[in-house]
Amino acid sequence: MTAALFDVKAKFSEYVTIAEKGEVVEITKHGRTSAVIISVDEYNRLKREYKPSFIDQVNKWKRKTGGISEIDAMEFEKALSRDKELYSTGGVF
Image (cartoon, rainbow, N blue to C red; front, side):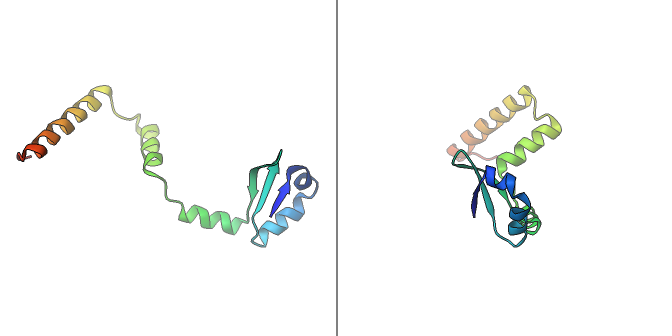
């Protein structure tokens, strides 16, 4: 279901009831969907099934740890380059 913001503002409790019954309510503002009302059951299901992307996980790690230093990054790049050379020439790791 789609509803304009001005209508949702006037009848918010009705739209919440619709969402509680399992229907997704897309709220439009100036003709474009800008928000959604969903039931708490649907919200909880989405939270349970959410699997963060690799980039999301890296960004979370960087926020938590501060990431790696420039020196560590350079050493890592050197190691990758060295391993790539060894691999391409059939060398032993």
